[in-house]
Amino acid sequence: MSRLRMVALLILGYLVFIVVFPRFEGELLNRITQTKAVRQSETLTDWIDGMTSCECSQARMTCNPNCRENPQLDGSSPRTIATGFFASTFVLTPFVPRHLVFIETYGKYQKPPWVFGLIATVAMFTACTINFVLGACMGLVRGRPSAGQRWARSLDRWGPGVFLIGCIAPLGFPIGLASLYLGWRHTRIAFFLPIAAVGCACHILVLIAASGPLLRWWSA
Image (cartoon, rainbow, N blue to C red; front, side, top):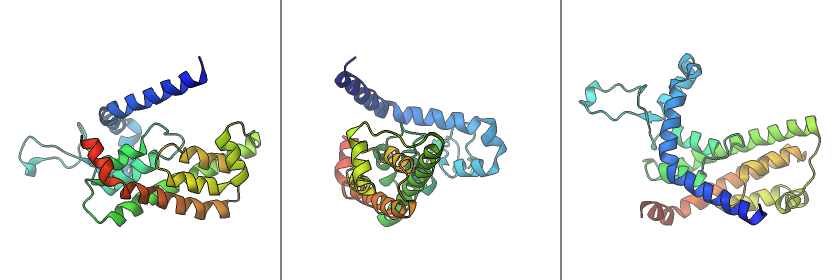
C-alpha cells in the first residue's frame, strides 16, 4: 500500500470516528463507570460524578444526582473540560479529537471565556508535561531516537520553537507526540515548560477566537 493511500485511509478513519464519537463517548463512559476499579475508588467515582448529569423522566426532586446506570456527559462541567483537553493531548489517548471536545464544551460553559481557557490550558499543559517526562524516561531506557520524519528533524533543529508555532495552528500538528519527542530528545525541561505553557495558552486562544465559525459549522 502506498504512503499516500495509507494517509488517505487514516484521514477517512479519523473523519468516521468524529461522526460516531458522541455515541462512542457515551458507551465508553458507561463502561468506565461500571468497572470494578472505579467503583472501589471514591476519588474516581467523585470525579466521574462531577462530569455527568442525569436526565430524569420523573420529577427532578426524585432524580438520583449520581447517575450510575445511564450517565450523560455534562459539557458545562469544569471536570469534563479538563478531562477532555487532557485526554486529547495525552499520548496514551491519541484518538480523542481536541476540536470536538472544544465544540461540545465551549458553547455549554456558562462562565466567562477566560475561565474556560484557563481550565483547558492547564489540562493541556499537564498532559504535555507528563508526555515530556514519559519521553525522557524512554530516552533513558532506549537512548535517543533517530529523526526520520521532516517534522521530527525540525524539532531536532529548532526544538521547542517549532512546538510553540505548531500549537498556534489548531489543525495538523501533533502536540502530544511532539511533547513526548522533545522529552525523548533530552530537551532541557526548564526551557520546555514555559514554552509549553505559552503554546497551550495560544492554542486555546486560537480555538476561542475561531469559536463562531467552528460552532456554526458543527451546528450546520
